[in-house]
Length: 176
Image 1 (tube, rainbow, N blue to C red):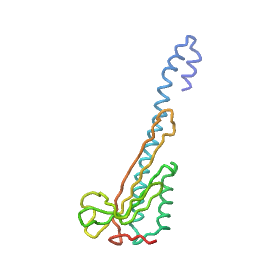
Image 2: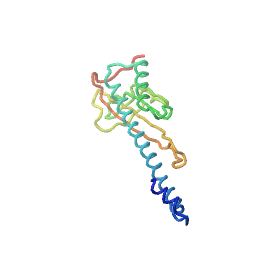
Image 3: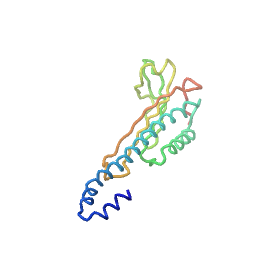
Image 4: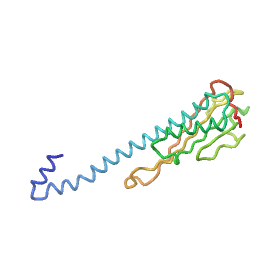
């Protein structure tokens, strides 16, 4: 880099300066573009980690209540850092067998989103819920906005859904 600067100082005809002016925007675009893509990929990995951790934390319990779910959301917010928590919509739902091979909502809690209503049908992958069983479903949606709005002006919506079977009981009950 220093050699290039020295050559530009010595060149009196302006050719080096013109070449540098032509190459500089492309180099800057590549550098800042790489930074933006890396940041977006890291955020996507965090969204996946938040979804799996949310389902896993709840699946370890036999019963769960308001204070427990508040602690879960606090832990999930720590995982999202350094990205703004306000961009994360997290829904944790206990889906139980509906008797027809599908699922319905037993209970649902949300942060920055609307929880599912009790009894609503939920489509889950075939064979995931056994008769009398349940599954914990964690849905995470994150509205990612690029750090440099000069390069990328559109926000990206990243989504992930993760399912986990309860570990101790067939169905995790909600306690008020």
